[in-house]
Length: 312
Image 1 (cartoon, rainbow, N blue to C red):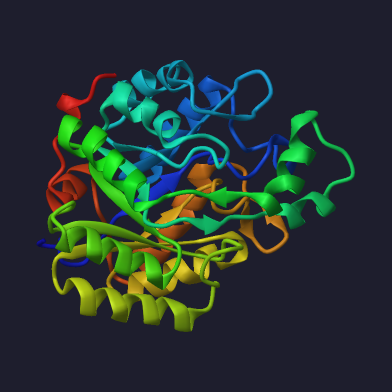
Image 2 (image 1 turned 120 degrees about the vertical axis):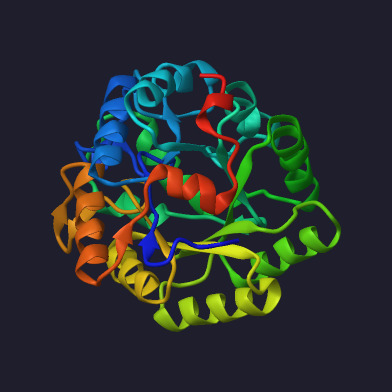
């Protein structure tokens, strides 16, 4: 997979499924706000927009394709960004429900988690005395019982439903080193073909910790398993977001930011928007002497099918 020398692709994860409306007024959940923030992030330099949907009435997590279609056409009409629809979406529903939005929208990219894991953020509940919506507190507190299911059968179903049927390219999300070996097994058995795009993820409770030694370890392991047949990016949760992005840039990787991953722009200060985070990481990229990749650079780097082949 030829990499554009000196170019770094920025992905922006706009809203996600962890943070709730109480945590930040900037977190978008109404379709017009998701669209506006995604467009602004693309204008700021995000080549890829990682997309979840929310119920517009109360901001709860939604897998309803209609909620996605309330903003996807608007984003596509006003940006050239690569749209990457999550197949994570909810920790409480089936893989069939989780892939439904991508099956309807046929995007250029979708996320694909490469292993089952404990996935918890229950500690966040203690930070807030009151919540905007009734669902929020229980949703957060009960995450200590959540298992994020991604069995080999689930992974194969996603590849068949989206990869084979729609030509979707996957953001292979790896929350721990074992997920890299899962991906290698899938490739060895013919499920995925090189080149692949891997998102190293750090700092989620239940996954590998946000220690820089772990980033180096994950990268070395991927090099050993995949050689030159992969591209990679780094996402780190919370306060680790920008330090890990900076390290990834210097190691030759790509980066992901966004309010899904961190609500802050610096320690103790909430970000005003997704675009503010994109602008910050863009400054870091350029000040380190690199160039920000365009959406078409990413399409070439990842061999994507093109925005003319989506259905929104």
